[in-house]
Image 1 (cartoon, helix red, strand yellow):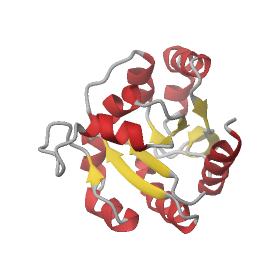
Image 2 (cartoon, one colour; image 1 turned 45 degrees about the vertical axis):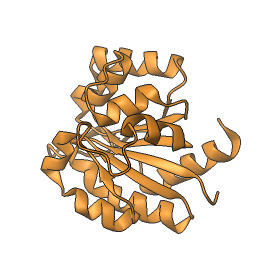
Image 3 (cartoon, helix red, strand yellow; image 1 turned 45 degrees about the horizontal axis):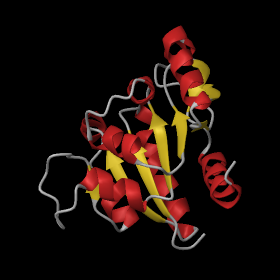
Image 4 (tube, one colour; image 1 turned 90 degrees about the vertical axis):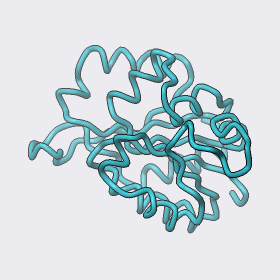
Length: 182
């Protein structure tokens, strides 16, 4: 899997702390990882952490002057072998399903030809909401793949479906998809 480029998209879920472990596992398996964070994700955790772990710049500002003067969402979209959204909120799922590209992460997803794997993480009531479920079904029909969520302890203190899939399962699915394409 050497030389495979993975974009890890991070959204404002409390499960964002698990992204550090995801990056470490991907790097251990010789993947190159570029992180794109939403603005709200940056309010939860510093981009510097992910830059240090990935050994790459963390991207988050669609209108920042690019270092190499490429249109970033296009250049990132083209070099990706896979985009992994982990954790993925109801908000990002809804934006993608609606074709909304209003930040660097959603613009990159809309511009890519690479497969997109989505690992949801949210409250059970949010996950089971009819609109969220309809958005998930729409994305599945369009070829987007989902990993989890699983039942577990949620940020609100309750136990239910909506817990981010285990990191080992996420990594297993990434490798499987890149090897077999399914």
